[in-house]
Amino acid sequence: MAENIGKGNNLQPSSASTTTTTNVSNTRSFWPSLLRWIPTSTDHIINSEKRLLSLVKTPYVQEQVNIGSGPPDSRVRWFRSSSNEPQFINTVTFDSKEDSPTLVMVHGYAASQGFFFRNFDALASRFRVIAIDQLGWGGSSRPDFTCRTTEETESWFIDSFEEWRKAKNLSNFILLGHSFGGYIASKYALKHPEHVQHLILVGPAGFSSETERITKFLETWKGSILNRIWESGFTPLKIIRGLGPLGPDIVRRYTSGRFVKYTTGEILNESETTLLTDYVYHTLAAKPSGELCLKYIFSFGAFARTPLLHSASEWKVPTTFIYGFQDWMNYEGAQEARKHMKVPCEIIRVPQAGHFVFIDNPTSFHSAMFYACRRYLRPDPDSESLPEGLTSA
Image (cartoon, rainbow, N blue to C red; front, side):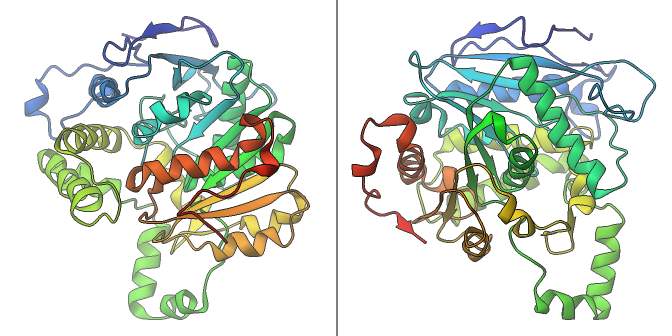
């Protein structure tokens, strides 16, 4: 059953434990989920999101925001179709104090807004927090991905976000993007700086250029084979789908290892691990859509085809970079970009944290966030010093 919702309308109030959701599209299988090769569906995604967000104490509203079938000034619809079928962005908005600054949170590659589950309560105490699933990810619409160039692929994400912003009637907000979401947030701020008050880039992709080591590796037979696989459109998520009913166990091993066994920060408890694993599996195993952007945005090694470093001199929005000490994304790229920026720019490093700094060390991440946004939260921001434990790069 598909349900159309007017842009920005039909909000559905809910508490953290009783979220009401509306499906974008729900293709029900004749067979029970246990008999499916890939045991997931749109229902599974929404329900696993609801279970994960039951850990959040702050009441919130979940909605599917109608972004139409494509930008009004574009000849290409979101999925190169003659259909006028609208697409939707899955959105959660948390209760906040009146006049709180608006913080919009954008997830990274192979992730969804639920990855911020450890942060919503703390951030909602100071901000009006809105988190989204980008088009083609999580509980948002998953149109066929038929982009064929880097420019078209970037527009697919940037323009869908702009249509979402219009539907929500937002402006003058703080925009946070993690990893690939940081890349998209940066590109959006370059195109629409008038709407972004401050840009927060958490372990962002796109600020490093291909290294000599990678170039030499690609000249080897192993590098050539791996590069061919990359350019073929292969994504890691295809492995999860290919394993069928074994996929959930692989994801469980990953989440238990990455966020429990090998973490250097605040490990997930048993309940968090179980709920996050379930959520991650269903968001990754669903129909491939946004994930297929990979080879158009990045070359082998996750190096941006149009590095943000090249656009640093065009920056118009004050920016804060946040990196975990063990983040595999190199903060030196941000240092180099800062040299060319004509706007205020800070780089903060968080201890006991890797690429998922907001999961690894949420307490220090929240301190970094409040410090980065002190001008919007404090009457005397210049008197505030960097919180203990954090490092300025």
